[in-house]
Amino acid sequence: MEKLVIEGGKPLHGRVKISGAKNAALPLIAASLLAPGIHVLHNVPDLRDTRTILTLLESLGLSWERDGSTLRIDGSGLKYSEASYDLVKTMRASVLVLGPLLARLGKAKVSLPGGCAIGARPINFHLKGLEQMGVQCDLEQGYVDASIAGRLQGGRIYFDVPSVGGTENLLMAAALAEGLTIIKNAAREPEIGNLIDMLNSMGAKIKGKDSDRLEIMGVEKLTAAENRIIPDRIEAGTYAIAVAAAGGDAIIEDCEPHHLPSLVEKLQMAGIDVEIGDTFLRIRSKGIQQPIKAVDVTTMPYPGYPTDLQAQFMALMTCSEGVCVVHETIFENRFMHVAELQRMGASIQIDGRTAMVKGLVGKTLTGAPVMATDLRASSSLVIAGLVANGRTDISRIYHLERGYEDIVGKLSGLGAVVWKENE
Ligand code: EPZ
Image 1 (spheres, protein in one colour):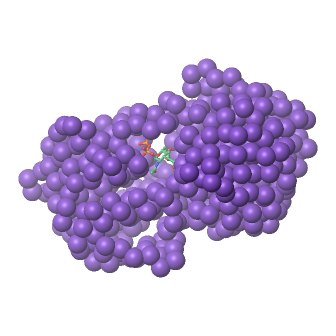
Image 2: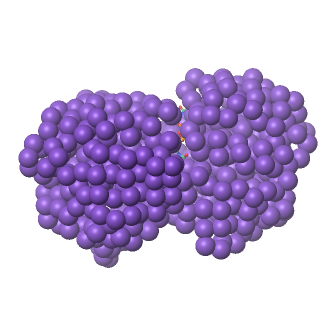
Image 3: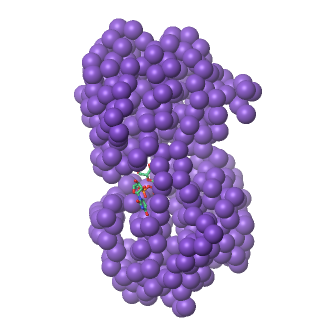
């Protein structure tokens, strides 16, 4: 296994280009199951997770080819309907094939994703919505065995909690259902808007984009189309926080600043200079010399503060001048980065889903060997390593490679001293 090594304490300068969004690429790749023909997707990041879902689509009979950041997926070859445990266990977003397989074939056997480091990650909302569309879902031996005779039926679906994956699965199922489907309390993340745009470009009839009430009038068939993945707001936010913490002056380009309203506000409240362009963010900071103000944060569904940027913001707050409270409302176990940050000298106390962070006023973190536990926790350790005095070795960086394209190249381009080594 490889580790990432960072010599910290250096400010970041220059420009970094943001890749396409992992959490848009995964559902949009899954949507290619809905229609035969060649689906063209531009700005697709080359990540462990996108490679995993493409392997899953191959196992279902589809073929694909990549030309730089453009993917061409042939939806014509679909002939199997089983997503195996060994694929789904490596990436729970594989469950996103459930809706399209049922819509196209009327059956799907998908391994239950199981939990992950950050939580149990159930899919009960997905299954309840499908059942309301007439699907029979049987759970046996760790698999969901779902089927329906004939077409899915449009239904009235209400989410107790706005589920991103649940909304995406049911949007894809409803696109080919008979009649009208209404989804209430739908998730509103920009990645869902990207999926809606793709489905509508394929002939779907979906209204309510960016709202929590979606109306889908099912159609008989869809046709392959050409689409573009939106920029990765979580990658952009990660680099913005990294510059804020390490100090420097950097331009984060090819991003969508208006997809990060709550992060921009929090950084400005922390005293960071944030310039907002049409497709870029410019971050200027003196790092711990700033000094960085302590700012409370509570994670919420979009457009609230993203849970996927909680660990990264906490790394920034360890270097602030005061005490702040970080409240994680989305997942039950998303503080795996805390113990590792404490190894670097951070002062953090956890009480359930709340963490109290006491800033190291005037001092900074110290480099140490630490371990990545999940995707965003590992990016939090990268930020801590960039700030810390001395060397930080981050092990198990396969977590990081799931969601950050060319992170060594991008950080080096900003002047960071970072490299990979075999553990
Ligand atoms: C998506 O996960 C993202 N993944 C996650 O990003 C992100 O953290 C999450 O949305 C929240 O924004 C992808 O898009 C591939 P949810 P998802 O369904 O769809 C509970 C990353 O780091 N829930 O919105 O799985 C669930 O347990 C990843 O890139 C149910 O109880 O999240 C959680 O507490 C991590 N039953 C809450 O709802 C269900 O059927 C929100 O989950 C579904 C969800």
